[in-house]
Picture 1 (spheres, helix red, strand yellow):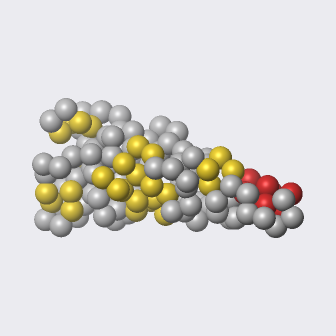
Picture 2 (spheres, one colour; picture 1 turned 135 degrees about the vertical axis):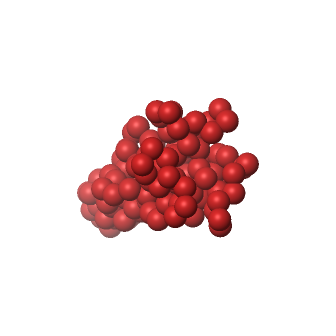
Length: 128
């Protein structure tokens, strides 16, 4: 069981210093007054905003700054790099031909961060 996710949902990357918010463009997928999210709402700087500073050494900017600091981990600004949709998505709800995004879905940053949903942004629709 999971909740459907809408625009404004609170999201967090495991390597980010700050939470962020999921942006969802309406595109005829509105529940009440909020835009419903699908697994394809995964575009950096459109749907996924930065998470403050990134502390993952797999991020080339963090690796370079850490090397310049003689091996002391040096966080750098988060620039999400997303190569795939959210997974797994809702097995029972489709929106515009794509599985709806639910609160148990995860998104993987190419630098190794796991992005999760802290608060779904919509509390009235429970999905089996």
